[in-house]
Each structure stands twice: as C-alpha cells, then as structure tokens.
Length: 53
Image (spheres, rainbow, N blue to C red):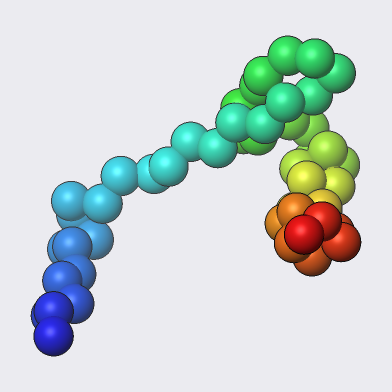
C-alpha cells in the first residue's frame, strides 16, 4: 500500500490549462469571463460512453 504525499502550499504551482478553439490552442486563463464559464460547463465524454465498442 502506498502512502499519500501532500505538498506544502508554499511549494505548489498553478497548472496552466490549454484548449483548442477554432483550430488553434489557447490558455483558458486568457479567455474572457464568459468563455471561461462556457469552458467549465463543457461535458467531456469517452469513446466507450459515446457508444463505440
């Protein structure tokens, strides 16, 4: 059994999330508030859930 390790808050680093929009990639942090809200509401799927064998 492995032990869970936690990192002190002072050593944590923010993760930058990028997404593809209209054929090019952009960081979500650069979106306007409306587009950021839309990004949070997106529904992600897997191929299995989409009906593929």
